[in-house]
Length: 292
Image (tube, rainbow, N blue to C red; front, side, top):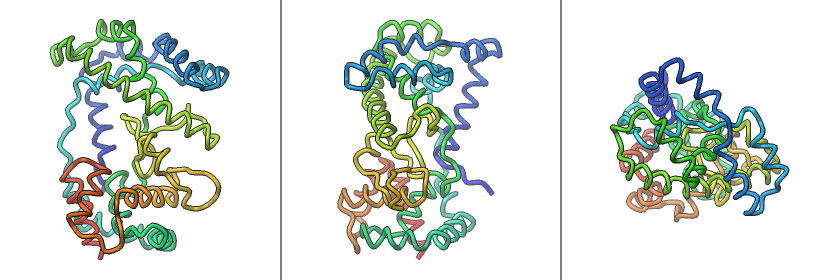
């Protein structure tokens, strides 16, 4: 039995969108799009302090391209309602218990350091990525760069001219949303590049959700820079490792007020900072109770 995590649900939506909106010819044409869209973006990153040689190297890599189809989802995508009940059925709870047993030492260490219930940490990892089994397959650099590039009017114009679903959004609303998303994505892109440079990772090869969330904990880059921690103390913060993901989740929750013995209402408020869905919050607490 497979858990349909938020990431897997979004991946299914992306596949369906691609099939419905693009012909085979268009799909091939999309794959061949160059990176002219990133020219102004590169100059802005360099102006903001990133090393020119590194920026040029990243964006000259053939793996780096404008993600037309993924970006389109931000303008027409309406996420299907996630079935949170799947996370509280017997099979899912059984898998979570196995996970807790396998990672018992690290979970207990994390709980001791941060004061965050190991059951809540496990519950978040279960819902976010199916206990680390569904991490996303979208290029984080491509996704955030593509959205950031919408600051350039020429990029917005070209995208709109080739957009196949104009009946679902007006030009005015598209412009407003594109500019807003560009500002948001650029902050995340800068944080992502800063993180990869700090930890000596290659940003070109890192994959995550279609929205840019990373690793087992599904942190956005700005959240990662602020709250991620080195749980296994190997000198590297890597949210694709369970120890670092656990410590980072605990660090985040502690920062927003989690303490041993925290009451239910306070716990809800804190978890809501992690994901602004009441269904999500209630599911995390229900899983935690079932793991008792």
